[in-house]
Amino acid sequence: STEIQFPADCLSVPTTSIDHFWSHNWGGPLVAKILVLLLRYNGVAASVIGMLCAGTGTVLSSLHILPSWWMQHSIDANRDLEYAPWSMMFGLVGFFATLFLWAPQSQVFLDKACIHQSNEYVKQKAIEGIGAFTA
Image (tube, rainbow, N blue to C red; front, side, top):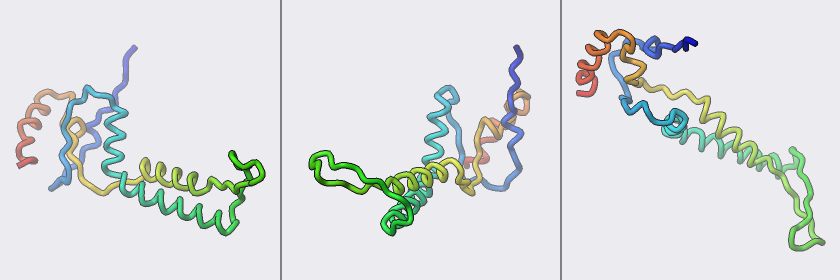
């Protein structure tokens, strides 16, 4: 069977400057690389928005706008506790939505995507010219 591969270099665009230069070993686990990059570039925004969403859930629960449940106390059977998981749920949804959907506005030079991968001559010329970007 023939595998169709998406040419990463078709995502390249001309630019006069870059904010970040990424070059690394492509042999490692892809999921780990993606998670590290998501946390590196979106982690702070995801944390802040997650906390704001959790705070919103707490306020809405405290004002009894959102429902809560009663649970029996695990130690004292004569005592009931009010349980409202909204702050945790709102916080997690806000965190993960921001982590995966936030679009940072930086220009990135990614060697695998910015250097032609199928034409060896063009690839070699691009690799030789990397020094101009990093100087």
